[in-house]
Amino acid sequence: MSITTLKQPAPDVSENRIMDSSPRSDQPRRRTISPAQKLAYLEGYEQAIQTSEGGSYLRANGIYSSHIAEWRKLRNAGILDEHATTGQCGTPRTTKSKLTKEQAEIARLKKELAARDAKLATTQTALDIMGKAPRALGADLEERGFRIDSRAFMKNVFDQLIESGISTRRASSLAGVSRATMARHKRAERFPPKPVDAPRPAPANKLTEAEEALILETLNSDRFVDQAPEQIYAVLLSEGTYLCSVASMYRLLRREKQVAERRRQARHPARKVPELVAYQPGEVFSWDITKLAGPRKGTYFDAYVMIDIYSRYVVGCQVHLRESGALAEAFMKQVFAQDQVPQVVHADRGTSMTSKPVASLLSDLDVLRSHSRPKVSNDNPYSESWFKTLKYMPAFPERFGSLEHARDFMDRFVHAYNTEHRHSGLGFHTPADVHFGMAGHVDDQRLTALEKAWAEHPERFGKNRLPKKMLLPEVAWINEPIKQEDGEKMLV
Image (cartoon, rainbow, N blue to C red; front, side):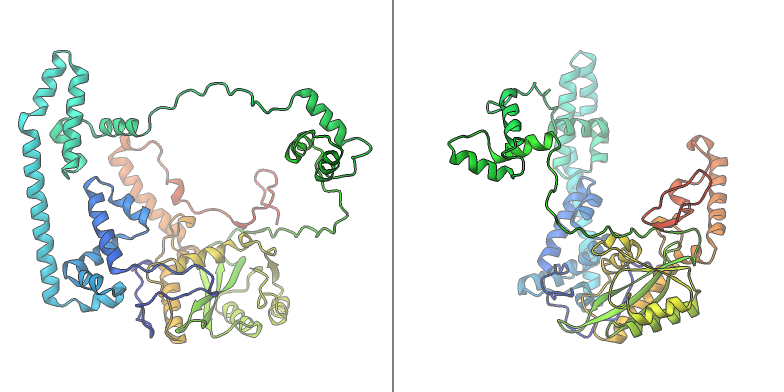
């Protein structure tokens, strides 16, 4: 089981409606795919795989391969067609339960029949196009000096095979041409080389050097030195003089670096950038609170989540009916009792994060408090990234039917994330392996497998070492601090 295929019990609310699952009604709504759209996606995907572009089609349309497999079953059983004609908008969770054994058998037989028909049509088309043996014809033309004509003929045959639905691999084999060559020719036709840009002529409305000098002299004169370009422009027009537009005045002043703020305005001091570094688990924790949509519009549950930024291990997760400083304090006490007390706890500037109960607890435990700058979401990247991983997964429900439903889902997701998810920022280790010191053992197993491959086929490898993406980073940070001399740790 992976976090993208996590199953959850059906919520207590109907999912056949498009609901607003965001904290505010003016926020974007979650994506809902109707049966008619699913049929259209299936048709587009089946056309794309004919040209070996199925994977790119899934990525471009934001669809998983598991969606295609499930929608095919529903279509073959006739459920999608029935819902599309009646206008119903069911999700895979609601329609999947309607498949009977007879419908599943019908779907399997339809799939086999469609595959046989497609194979038969492809074979017949290939036989019709290849009736004149283009391999021999192409070689004969090249031997007689008609190399360009032979290539054009073979390309025409290749294009006809592709248009008839034959895959590029099969078409290249039948036509006797290289797929790379055909792809290069197609790209050249689609994107012809751009002509060399000719020197751009000077604009007809360009100011002369004498006019620019006069404008700058006027702007910097004793009469206008303290006035803005708009005021100078208006005064000169009232006197019957036109030098240039206001935009040209600003352009010339910017070129001479003479545009600066001169008004006596109050300026807020720059906020200190939080710079945190962790060299091992247990040093820096990051926590935040996110909203989970409840059973009705306008109702939400609050998920308290704390993460170790070095190992990405979720050290604590609780779901409550509301957000408060007292609940945050109790949440932290439980986390510190189960795991360990960190050196630094980082959070944004929410009311619960800056509340007195939380501040007093961290002060009593001698834990350094760190907060993000106002309106700077990048200062808490680990929590924000984890929330996106949670809410963008296909199995994440649009609404939770009850508090127990939300707590059960979060518990199972956190367990799968900690113990099964291969994190790309951790050398594809699981957070649990890194947090509990098992990453070195996993690296040894990987290295043993690679050493065996190096010994069997040394010609296939340039360097005998683990790929860089498989290496565990030595340090994790929030806003990378300034580095000292080589060999020394970063300044914190």
